[in-house]
Length: 395
Ligand SMILES: Nc1ncnc2c1ncn2[C@@H]1O[C@H](COP(=O)(O)OP(=O)(O)O)[C@@H](O)[C@H]1O
Ligand SMILES: [Mg+2]
Image 1 (cartoon, protein in one colour):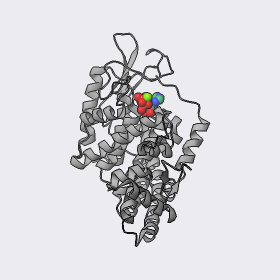
Image 2: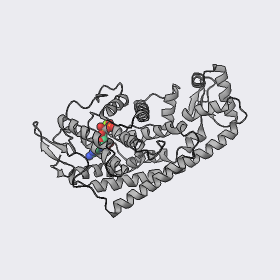
Image 3: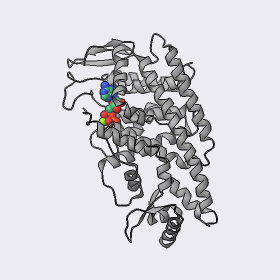
Image 4: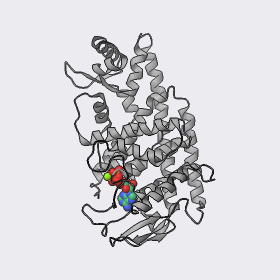
């Protein structure tokens, strides 16, 4: 790592002889003032977020759909780390339909669980602390031998080409003692709401600082982006967690990393903040379109199941688990297997679900229109990025 000194911190030689980065506490000093461009970016991001919040109020039962947004974000945030799978794979895995066996899907499903853990936590308290981050990390890496699930890193780590030493690394985060200090400070910064800083700016700074601290052996990118989502919820800018930024970060991955480096090397906080705010603006705009489609879809579905005695019940289940088999329906709705099969067949006749296996037994049904209307092109865009980029080397 090159020597660095900036308002974000400085490199220092550690006893083992290489350089590590010692971050300064947030907020940056001297006090960070947004320039005109930054103010405009903030205004636009807040405006689009406000429009999304307004739109979201017209979605009936928004809780039902949160799971789909969470899965999407888990998939895209994982893709940034080259952990790659599709939404259908995740849904089939969750439906336990003996279809999918892949490490990537398992990792994404654990991400989904960690995400729900974080959201559930925020219904109890708005405090986002180190204990929470560690707990979420434990869920994210559950059962993985490497990566110290549920613990902060016990020793130095670094970011660089595969096999590179600390001396050759692109970035070496602080040693453990400074890491704990920096985490304590970050925790204070995230939860201290008296300061006049705009919440979106606070969120941008917190993510960058978390990546600079890099407190886990593995999973720092994913937990750091989960932290963005949790802070956005904590800010209460949105009543529902409908806004996630990972597609933007994935599509702009090189700039994402450059901006993080720019903070440490040059103290370029403003460059990162503007990049982040543009992401919020664009992402919120896209999310409005999805919400509108959801409202229309729900109205159509309600008409379709009208007069079906237990139709609404199955419909609710399908919003949460849009790929499902009869065993799943039996389990969730507490009905017999025959009833579950009959209900799914009825929904198939109504054109709500489609059978996807072509089998006589063990049939699996997919709620096509719902899954597709929540996909505003993100799957295709993810596939494009994947095709275009050679895998990025890890540690
Ligand atoms: N200079 C950098 N180059 C690459 N990634 C960086 C850099 N600085 C910080 N990062 C962050 O580190 C993350 C990768 O860390 P890692 O612990 O492997 O996360 P994960 O397991 O979620 O893959 C990236 O997604 C990014 O957020
Ligand atoms: Mg990793």
